[in-house]
Amino acid sequence: MAAVLAACILTVATPLPPAAAQVPGGGVPKPVQEAIRNAPEPGPEEVVTGAYINDIQQLDFKANNYVIDLYVWFRWTSPDIDPSNSMEFMNRFASDDNLREALTEKPDKLPGGGYYSILRYQGLFSTKFQLANFPFDTQYLTVIMEDTVAGAGDQVYVPDGDTPVLIDPVITLPGFHVGTPTMKITTNTYPTNFGDPSVPDAETYSRIVLSVPVTRPMIAMSIKTFVPIALIVVCALLVYFVRPIYVEGRIGLGITALLTLVAIQLTATSSLPDVDYLMMIDKLFLLAYLFIIVALARVVATSWRGEASEAETKAQDRRWAVWALSIYLIASAAVVWTALR
Image 1 (cartoon, rainbow, N blue to C red):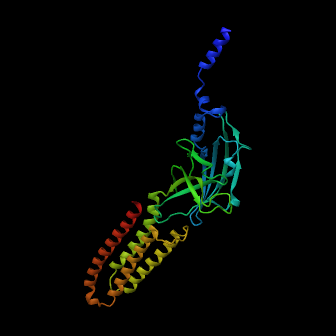
Image 2 (tube, rainbow, N blue to C red; image 1 turned 45 degrees about the horizontal axis):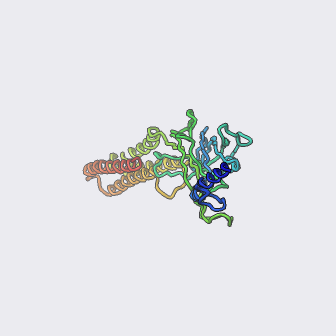
Image 3 (cartoon, rainbow, N blue to C red; image 1 turned 30 degrees about the horizontal axis):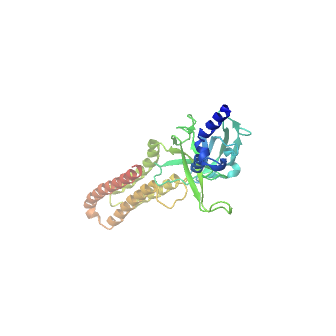
């Protein structure tokens, strides 16, 4: 009897657990409820992405396209997605000529968890080349990728380490120097739901932008660009040193220089597209045209003078030659400096 009484006293004296005391009827404890309410919303699936550029071919400025051969790989954790299958190249050109090859039949499971997949893509890509500084321009060959299924709220791309994109160290592109490629992760918002009422009107997608800078060799391009123009300007300059009485010869020399300059300009720009702005090379040709026109105008102006004033005309022609050449050189240097700064 004493033992039973002692047990009853201990039962009554033992306090209830704090959570059970706060939740009548054995419900979910308040701390658990608060933890559930304050738990962060699950974020978008992160897809680690990297690329290796194997080759660059067929750079066509007139058609604004180029061929790139590259590998792209993905690592992720969710078994419900396959970004290697749903990824789309956004700036591909003439898609019938492109080759997309998955190097694994299905995503490989990684030992530490997650999945891995890699694909190879070879084909034409397109970008609008900026040629204002031609021939000293720097062009960026880009490859743009987005997921066709998941928006940025469900899936985002993440660069694979500090150097997510590499390029074959022995790659060559005739006529160009190939720079170091970069990868940039951005977002792109489309102002439409593409007719799907279940998605917002302006959905945002994660976007990968691979960029490879290419430049022309400056010394070689300077020789090819400036030497022909300089030779023609020198020929036009000789107009000032022909005796004023030989008007036909002076005019013929200037007209020949003018026609030669037109032919050289057509040849120099034949591989470039038609643009709605003046390129650097156009400005240099315009200055050369102006130099020749000034020389021809001087010949016409002096053709009305008689032989008696030939000595005075020759002296004036020398001064005209110095001033015209000086102004031409200063203007040409200003055009080149503006393009290179």
